[in-house]
Length: 180
Image 1: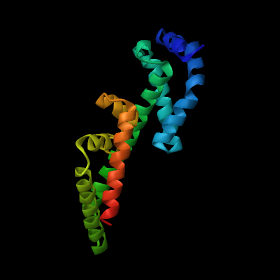
Image 2: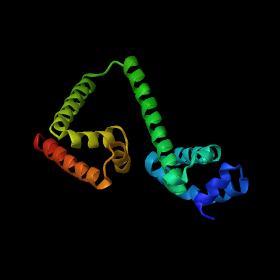
Image 3: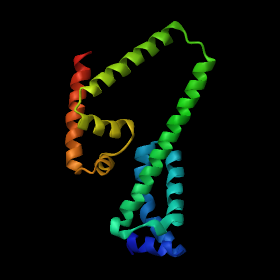
Image 4: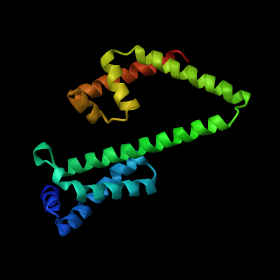
């Protein structure tokens, strides 16, 4: 049986169909999550969360909007990105707290100043991109969207987004390399 049929049966509470769906999609889900999260144990947790979410929300699958596998992998990607963002935010909170409790030495102060200058340099280079290139680059690199998600968000063909990204990243590389 294919994932579309299985997911429809899972939506009706069919446990056997869920077992079969689990066997069919757990590998691809784990692979996708592992590429995003990178940490093996975190990836296993996120994979289990995704599969549990499939059991709970299978009724939300709409076959008119795409295949079951693409829907499942979209759920997995979103959950993985959420985990990365959550870990990043927790790390940032910990770093802020550590900075409050720690009085930096001179070298750390100079490094922070240098990092601030580098951020400003990147901002200036981003400002040199066209508005369309900047929008695509920002969505992909600062907001964590895939090229396909950027294309969907901007309602553009994937090829157009890829071209904007290639051109924008080339201009950034030239700008950042030229000021070194």
